[in-house]
Length: 256
Image (cartoon, rainbow, N blue to C red; front, side, top):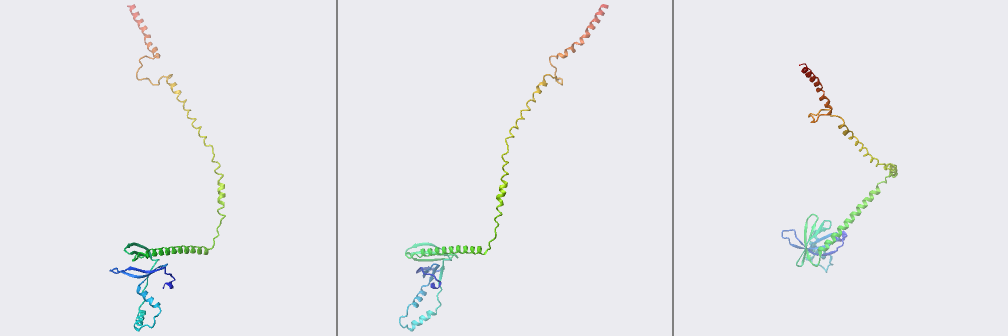
């Protein structure tokens, strides 16, 4: 079977697999490790294959020949293959006594328990081959994607690209460059604007001059203690009539 599939056996030996039944017994399996996975073969099938490969030792007895013919008629036992593409990790490595216990976790979530003598190191070999297989698959996937991209590029016709279109862009930029030259405009001229501020200073000067020479337009409510000099002639005018009165009295006295 390995020769037909083109896989080389990297390691062969016996592993004990825990059964899936209720008792969970350890059953021996003949294991063959390849670059693509792990093959599990029951030991009985190996014995039959070895007997068929061995050359006949003289005439076989009828009982033995009958037994061999019955064995040849029996249906072949199915091989169980744990392919690395479906394998996820090798976990739960423990050492107990003379055995090494480890668990192979499949992508579907199924867990398969194995044990082997510590000297054989099956867990390390299985892990190494699994990692190498996945690395090879990743490299092949990258190569296939690159090849597909190259085929797509070759199939597409070359589209004519008009390159002179971006050339007028620097010309427009060159035309727009003389525009920033008028930037150096004399902006410090608005500084002499604060000069008209001292002009309102001569305005308050005529205000105190009008207070002293001009009389009050309205009379004061309270009379001044001293009479103004302008009112004195008015106060002396009524006594001017008194001499006439005194003269009349004197004339009357003289007449008497």
